[in-house]
Image (cartoon, rainbow, N blue to C red; front, side, top):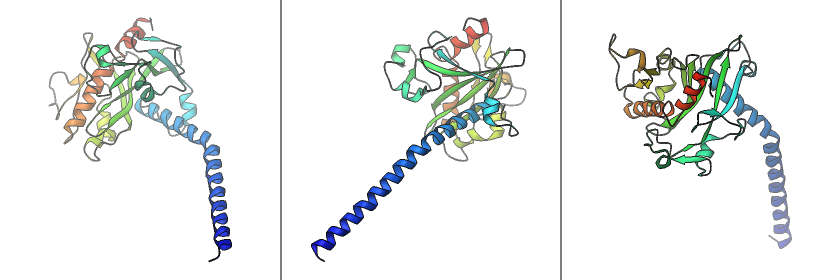
Length: 258
């Protein structure tokens, strides 16, 4: 093969690669707004589903229009303008020492195994037709067996009764820890009570609680064959409803001081 033929081949190959790169880059840029919209719609779907509010007869956007999105300071438990709720990334924030706290700084153990806790959070509030609080939906996360489970916990207007729970991201074992996605198990959370006499009482136990046993109103049966995932869910609930999680905010919201 002559040098001229080799040169032409290289030119053609380079040209094809250049055209393909331009096409791929253009497509990526053009699709970015659609991808962002899909991500936002998926998040809204998970928030509504966790609260038991998802209605297939309506668009997600229409249903979410009645949800207030607010930023809170986790240390003070009060609303804040320090962050933009629409762009807040709690996973990224938790890695930044400027806007997160170590558990040494918080003075507590990292029972949820999240490494660091972000200083701010975004919460979701739903009001009824009269403008009264109907539900509050809180982002939660914690480590199970193989992964960090990310989801939402919803409370009724009394800030004590569980309205629902749902996890949108995890890699727990299908059929075992993956049963956190099972509608039957999630249904067991509904109407359970988070607090008793001012103290956190909600718990996920290993095995199943016998019918009629004491403390049933605060107890969720564990996942069969998935002890570590069960413990992980129990710990993430204990952390996020505790003093270094949403407890200060819930107390302020109840007293009207948020």
